[in-house]
Length: 195
Length: 97
Image (cartoon, rainbow over all chains, first blue to last red; front, side):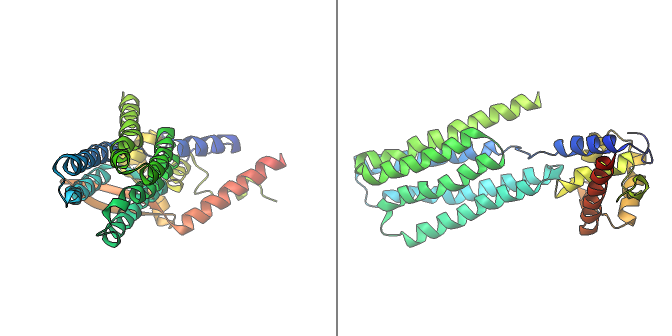
């Protein structure tokens, strides 16, 4: 575009508007980092908790979940740094970020009100985590995340009704289907689009 | 009934309309991004952004990031109104033909 004063026909104007709007579709960026980071972190924590509970029988096996607190800071710092480098921000980006912030706050509140009854937390957290995962799939138009969110709800039901042994293993399995698989697929998609 | 000449002259030019079309769909966009998407030269784009800013259609903020200047643009409420009016005027005009 060389001249700002170039006058267009009506059709040219519409074509230009459509073309420019299409260039600013939702920016899926590096959000795969968060799915992979949290997928692996929660998988590790839940397996560690299972091992402690099963083989050592420690009464406070759920303390491993305190590892998620530094995880929140890692995620926020990463998000802040990458966000600053982005060359445009869409309204959908904001909805995306605040959907996850709302989940974070809700999860923290849930942990506090469930203290002392931690055996009930897994199905509740999975139910809660399904919401931003499911919505994110729609926001960034990425179906594996929608399915990932649905699997969280399925595993939440299994965790509630399947008995202690199986319940303890639902969280790590849910991480595979809800975060890690969609996370790697998203990463591959972003890497592919960069080429 | 809209006539062709009723279209906002500030928007009815290629580069300024391209800038406004980008800004209508994002919250903020930086100068380099707009330049790449429109394919305009930096000088020409600066002039057209200046005109849109002067009319109150967009806001421009300048910051430093890693010691480099960064110019960010955002559409204003007035700009959004004018853009919507422009699109509906354009539709009327095309429907009349």
